Length: 414
Image (cartoon, rainbow, N blue to C red; front, side, top):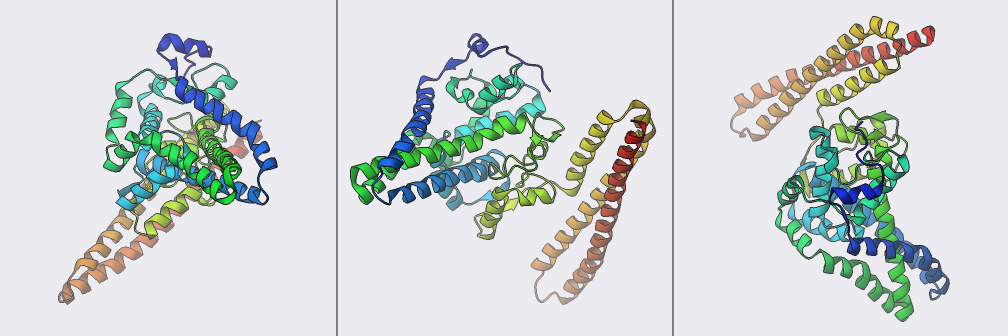
């Protein structure tokens, strides 16, 4: 954990920060309007319109949040898919407008800098760091919302990250972002409301739209604040923490330490709980099934095992008494290395299995002899994959059994 850089918010001004009166005013006014005027809109809404307003708000929030998590975050910021088709860009660049969180190009550049801190250690560049101040409430307010009220000092790192997001569609959205969000979040809902119930209906639907993008904003902002301040397991190289039982925001909050330890993974976390608590993952898998993205990136079995085992060894050392740890350290590290070796062997056999399947797929129908040879090799490799998988599971079980024995040894000493 890095040392605090600032004591209070006013310290920022001497470091080149300044208030962004445009964005700041918009955020303050939109939040106050939603808090104060939304109840009024529901009270005075034309008969029956309140149901449409409520549905509009929920759908608006989900669309904006999902476009942020699926597209701006995993696909664009982290390159979770090697191939993103043009229809995917076109669709999500439109849907992302409903989040009102800045253009995809700017959003992803900021997020790239946020993750780069894990490698560079340049915490002062992290635009929504939850570690800059020496009090939790300041860190929460800054990382959750206040960071967006300020112009940050220019940096070569941000410029490079911004320039790297150079797909023509992303650049086009960035250049026309202001009129686009006005149309999507103000003109469009007001026009729908006016068609349904006149000018009053238009104003009511405008408030429903405002509530939708405010909720979408906080859905994203909780990742910046909550998942870097409270959780069950720390990341290996970052301040992120795993929040296993929190569904929001659309899966980005859960296993956040796993995400920081391997950000290119299209999943947000490892293990079965990652599957249960990651709706964004399902959306990406649906896009792949529809042929809209391809070549999903994910951590190998070896990379997962390295992250989990190193984290477990670190945490065990921290909670163990010195006498117990001296007795168990060598054994635990040896079991960890055996697990990693088994993971590497399983990855290699699975890779060979995929390679042979691809060869068979491209062998011509007239090459019967070559085809029979390849299929014979494939059967042998398939058996090797099963053996490697069983060996991997056994070594993993040995490692976790040792962890349990270590806990019992600590309890006995305590």
